[in-house]
View 1 (cartoon, each protein chain N blue to C red):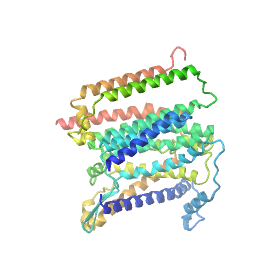
View 2: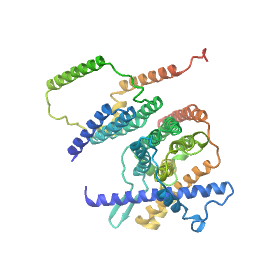
View 3: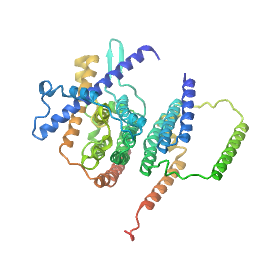
View 4: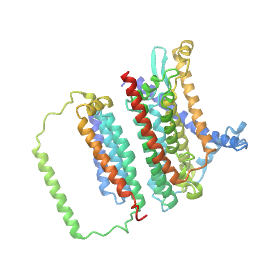
Length: 167
Length: 345
């Protein structure tokens, strides 16, 4: 049953991510992106990674996408304000897309299909085990990435702060 | 999965859903009565004795009103908005333990729909999702007041979610678990978390006022500036959905506060009552106690609404970012240090 659910949800993920690209209205695009993230959450649950599922839910669906929506609503993009792209850019885009497809197909063909990977510990995704892994063997990378986030945050605050002299 | 399990859960879900709707319905009545009491008026008293049928009359009115969808609105999203708001409000009840497991015959029935081991985070996720209903509805109305209100709601929710999450972290440092069931069981009898985390509770409560868009933080619905706020363009039952969602949110956050900080279904002397009432009725008594706590918090929400005037928007943001977040971080540090000292000696 889990396999059928997986295929169903995977189909939905692909449909929604295609809709993100094909939707004319940027707001609709973001809403489809939210749905896509929701299907990802279901994928995590199917993988028994509850913590990752909930974090994906809170951070991506609940926070980041709200900010996306926020900015787009403020911009109020319309069809009229959208700049008309020249045919040259369209041709360049098509060629770049084709190159990407060729590269992807090549790399996937090279990858040999191995037997399915089976986790030694199926409860790895639960909060307790994840915490032990993160704060045990992976402590240094974990702390380093948090430092990176802190640096980004300080940078963002600095950028948004008005110049004291001007004000 | 056997059929009995599904039926059992289905009945539980249906009962909880029904209770939430009834409580939301009568919260509107209670709100008006509380407002009347605080302002030295009588309040609704025409429909039935003490106006007890007023919510029914309001409900019928809501259903019967003409439904208007503005021509310039985005029709599909205009309909999705209120639906999403109500949906997000209702699904929060799934992880709250409503009582200790009940024994009927030789069957043990847990009075909780689902005990997932990330229960606290689930609640948090549902809360953060709740803003979409408001945002989508406000944007789809294609009205600048609605849009402004939607944007206010979004920024308010994001800001207060941070302080709320931080205040929960201090609690989690003490409980060592994310499962709501275990958190409640740890508060057996008198060991309520509010006694150990008073500051955390205060921050959490202020944040839940902001998350539910209740006064003094009801800036998204600020009439003097924004007409009706995000539901300016709504009429009929779609408006009803938004209003309902607000009251259900209030109910759910009261339940979460009671569960996390006020011991849930625990009360002093519960062991004695358990032997007195037996394993079937004692859990139900605990549930009644939990509901008493929830009703107190709902009353508290209303009490504050009719006592404290609305904040200004910059005051709201200052309180959130410069007041509550540093306070919550200090709370985490103090809690961590105290726990470390206790464990050392």
